[in-house]
Amino acid sequence: MSLETTNALVVRTVDFSESSSIVTLFSRDFGKVGALAKGARRLKNPFETSLDLLASIRVSFIRKNRDALDLLTEAKLVRRFRPTRRNLRGLYAGYYLAETLDAATVDYEPLPELWDLADATLARFQTDDDVPRRLAAYEAGLLDALGEFPSTRFCVECGEELPLDSVKNPDRRVLFAPNEGGVVCARCRVEKQFFELIPTTIAAFRLLEASLALAGGDESAPFDEFSPQGRAAYRDLVGRYLARVLNRRLKTANFMRFIDSSRTPRPENAEAPETFETSTQSQNSPPTSESPKLRQSPQSAPSQERSSQ
Ligand SMILES: [Zn+2]
Image (tube, rainbow, N blue to C red):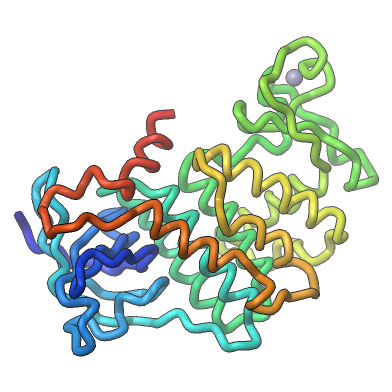
């Protein structure tokens, strides 16, 4: 047992008992941490609003041994996540970010660069009108941090560079092999048996490259110059590829298809966050008593699946 202090984002909370919650944190120094927050559900609680979903917090917790849940001792709010009522895109993009972080991260495996990107992205989501661009940068940075950023120019099978830059029309079709993690040239497409190939367009890969540059701080990276078709191809490609990389269907991904359109659905029509919250809870039906051996709960199972691939 040791007392640890770090910055963290709240990516999930589940009721645990009448008075307590289990919070899943993505922390800067320790990666994912699942911790018991005693008294968090009481009206007067020691954590106040710092354990709200997607809050950025400064947290202290007692790190228990392998099969016991960590115990939260202190949480101070650094920044709450509360986009304005007009900024529904930012709100839903935040839910999506929480779900992807929860799926992508592993207990006690820190990814500080991803943490910095996610924290900065959330701050942008609630103040910016630039949500699609910030979201794409986050996705590209996430893939990069996981070592899963795809090969966008070189055939993933033979290594040959595809002559994409000489193609005038960015909506021209290209094939992407999600399990191999990259584009496929015409010859390999004929000669090899790929388990799965996703038809996409050159624009989708150019957008992915621009998004990675933006994630790395290059604010001049082109993004807005792509056509709606190009952006739609990007969204489809990244949605499908992330589902493969994270080894799960993302409940909030469907909503992200509308993130780039001018039609921002109203809350009653947008099922994503509701579905997300209901199902995250049902996935994690809280135990009936405050037993200390919760580490094997579903919080860690999906990430183990991912890391075993
Ligand atoms: Zn090839």
